[in-house]
Each structure stands twice: as structure tokens, then as C-alpha cells.
Image 1 (spheres, helix red, strand yellow):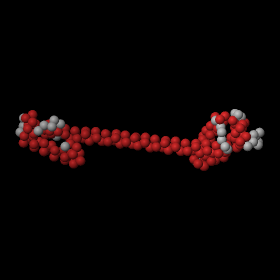
Image 2 (tube, one colour):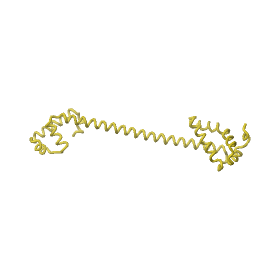
Image 3 (cartoon, rainbow, N blue to C red):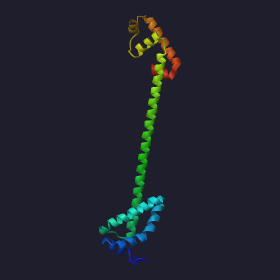
Image 4 (cartoon, one colour):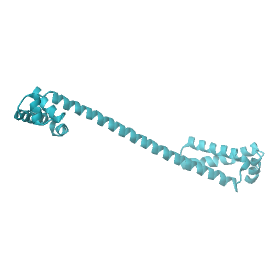
Amino acid sequence: MGAYAAYTDQDLLAFLNEGDAAAFEEVFVRYEPLLLSFIYKKIGDEDASKDMLQDIFVQLWNQRSGLVVQTLASYLFTAALNRIRDGFRHRVMHEEHIAKLQQLIEEEAGGTDHRIREKDITRLIEQEIAALPDKMRQVFLLRKDAFMSNRQIAEELGISEQTVETHMKRALKTLKGRLGPELFMLVV
């Protein structure tokens, strides 16, 4: 039994205020098992409980000279509850940040998948347009990309407007058959 074991908590507080390390050791011996058990019951993590307990006693030592408390036990258990609350707040914030990060990653992955699919679809459409017969492809591209009228296309290619219209109808029918209705809608 230590030399300070017979002293009351109030006596130990007075000694702590004077910077007495032996009084601090006695406070540790008295309250360490109780506080550790209290914290562990609240959070269920032994290592985190020990870390919190260490923080509480470090805080007690660091504030020893200006410490004004009614009872040592209430001070220590209140400090423990505050540490536990801070730990929960920190964990909740950490989990929220992780959830937000996960959401961003998923959105980015979804966006990446979307861009990849979009490029694949665009490449497929371009391949099907390139596979059209030459004149049909020319008519289709002049209408689609250059926004030319049948008359302008006919003049450009030296063919009749009726031939332009026929090439356009056949191009659309061919593309719809090869691409399917959903992708065809992207072409027109």
C-alpha cells in the first residue's frame, strides 16, 4: 500500500495542485481500474478504452496546478464521458466521410462506366455508318453532319433530289435494322 493510500480524494487534489507526482500515482491506482471498466462497457474496445484512459490521466496531470473540482471521482468520470462522446462524434464523422467518399467513388465509377459505354456506342454507330454503301453514306453524312437539305445534297453530289431521298430512306432503314430501335434513336 502506498504512502498516499490513506489520503482522501480532496487531499490528493491538494497535493496534485502542488505538482506532487506520488499523489498523481495514487489517483491513478485508485481510479484506473474503475475508469477502464466504465469506458470499456460504453465502447466495447479494449485498446480504445486504454487510449481514452491515458488521455484522461494526461489531461489531469497537465491541468493539475489549476484544477478546481468538487470531487475527484466526478471530474474523472465526467472526463471519461466527454472522451467517449468525442470518440463517438469522431467515429460518426469518420463514417460519414467514408460514406461520402464511397459515394463519390461509386459516382465516378458509374460516370466512367457511362463514358465507356457512350464511347462504345458511338464507335458502333460510326462503324455501321461507315459500312453503308458509298453514295448512301455520303447522303446520310451530309444530312446528319452538314445539315444540308435534299436540294443542297443533290447539287453537291450531282444527283436528283429523288435519289437523295431514296438514299436517305434506305440508310435510315439499314441503320435501324443493324442498330436496333434504341441505338437508332441516337443516330437520328
